[in-house]
Length: 203
Length: 179
Image 1 (cartoon, rainbow over the protein chains, first blue to last red):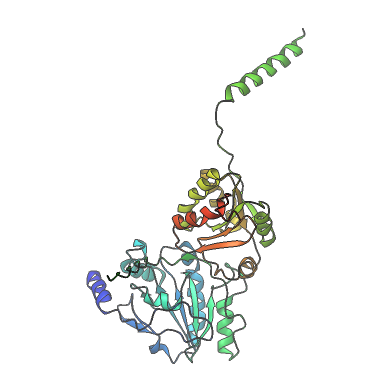
Image 2: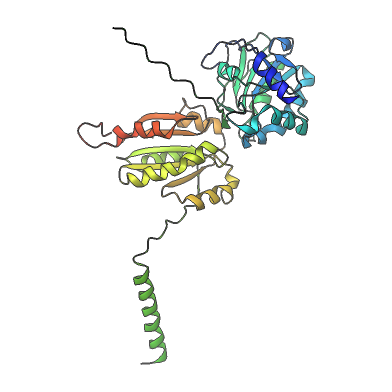
């Protein structure tokens, strides 16, 4: 079953984002469609009616990401009933970190009872499109499709609680007071880009 | 000679003999205890080695690539003693000062400053230290002999590329930049 799912992932993962550096507040959030631990595809577009979408790049193996799991669950449980959708994306493929493989994601989601989809960015295209650098790395997308916050969940497990504050601002119709904060976490394990081939000299 | 005088000279003899015997043995450096540091302390550590090339390494015990590259920093420091200074800044929880952080320092015994970040607001620290840095680790900042930031490596960089960048900075000859 899992092998079949992995095959489906590889063959069908439809990621409609061009490669780009990093999205900043005020810019359009890159669209994506990724396979989740619930064996369904989830796209940014399908949650367009939400009051905001929280895209959080996270993973299994990173102790910082793990340390923020309960806090993210708590925030999701507080804000999802108010119309905000959470989407967790693992940007570390199994060939880079075995503990972040799809079967391990299913196990983690089941163990923690994640109240939001946990998606596998096996090609890393989505992480690259957003410019995710660490896990956890949060992006908040407003209903108009623009990024309104990017950065950390909070100030290293104490206030200010950047993500919750940004969501309060969105729900109240205010501009997000602090749209960017420094990230704190483990580096996303990007595959090394292939070296560009040297141009052939023509005689 | 009284008993107390004999005991005194016997003690002196034992201490002197022990000192002589241990002369030839190389004692491993004592493990530093992580020093809690804010932005001002990190800047101070950076300025303490004026005239040297300085590496400021942000790491944490939970950061696998950071742990893997740490011995290389020790090697460079030892190989370029007098020309290269290293300031290591751990982003571990300050509560781990005598826990995980010290266990790591005890094992590797770095011969350079071991700071442990203890700040009220991490975002403000990052903005104050280097606004171009996103706060992610591993992060290694390379300063020339003149104290100017010359290179910054953030993420999964190769230590070989850092070493390559260090060569001209360490070169004191007329061909090298020397600063």
